[in-house]
Length: 563
Picture 1 (cartoon, rainbow, N blue to C red):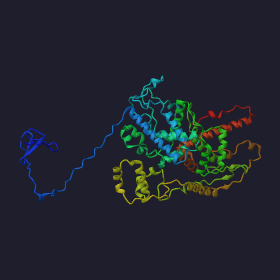
Picture 2: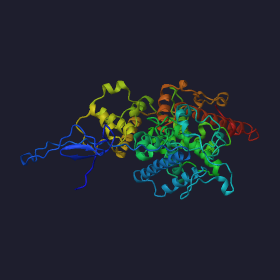
Picture 3: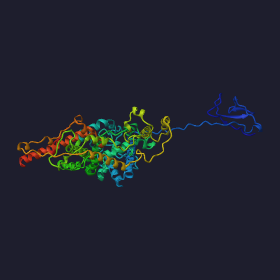
Picture 4: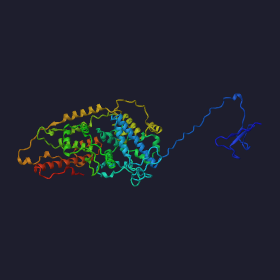
């Protein structure tokens, strides 16, 4: 007698009486392993004609299980955040070297600056399962952070207020990078990646400005605004929520934010490692400022003279006193440009004729024509959005946009907020606006940088300005001895301390200069006032020395300050 063949029930079924999980068939009747008859089953043998008549079998697809990544916390989460931030920094350096033609050793310089930045953090050494404590090397036994959250990146929420008065705070607010008494790590912020690249330019003496980095970031050329989308998905899934907020910043860089980050790093490098950065390579930057503002070349000579008078070296202050607006070398440089233009070419409509033909004031600039030239001849075609200005688009603008501008805005929105790791989400958002795909247009100004177009634009603006300049006849001083000793009205220049005090022409020049350098207009007005105050002190000192034949009491120009 053949042994009984047992079968297992399907899908978790079992016998209703005894709960057995196996059954066997006998005489076309199915029984459980314990002999209970199972209802609803009849076994029969099919005929040959019934072969192959079985219908189509459909199988239920199993739902793909999503793997939920474990969120790291504590020190592991902080180290993962630093690794992600380092990846963003490497991508920025790679773009600067490959696309902007920076020297090959630029990467080594930035790598060294980054190593110094994270040296005081209690990171885990490679190949070890435990964390290196500072006390084990004979240094401070401070320990490492076991709790607490990201401290430095939380200040991103206050970028607006910070950028408004970022030169009025004391330099002592940014001290050591070592963990404090509360065992909180002082981690770098996302904006520090751009600041480190800029400091690398200072070390390498490259004529790059913070405005250049802000422009590249606003246009999306260098990873910054959408840097979170470029981080690998498995890294993002394991980052804690507070570090997500550190990467997901605003849709633009507030004016003055990058300058404040650079200043903080300069002071911190001095405090932690006694590192001093070289001065700004200001000559090529000065020439770029003058040409971008379409100002006469005489501005360059006046700026060089004022630099000698102020005895400045264009170095970043490393602490020790209250930092003023003019202490930033880039702010000082653009302030010297606008002050020189103010001294040579009247901005308030008052005629200040020269005394001789050799006086630089013998030419008069038509500021109305200058303003028209600056507002025209843009690099962007009328049918496209201005790169870097997409965030200014309002809902009312979207309703009146043509098809080309709307496509540009949607492309920017997709790059900034959707990313490439969520194809379903991207397709769901894109479906209502789906249309024929646009072929890549190599002549599109939104896709490439046209240096020839920039040069042509500057040349056209200079042609307009030079055609509007007029020669002013000199008026010598009167020969009356009493009148000679008195200063003439043309020797005085007004001081504008607030934005509301600026005349129309001055507001146009100051506003264009502030936008060019990515600083607030109030900061530029304050810095220009401080420069004029020091010039006035130098003039008073010179007059007193001439009157007293060198026996008068000298005035120390560097000790004055202005609010």
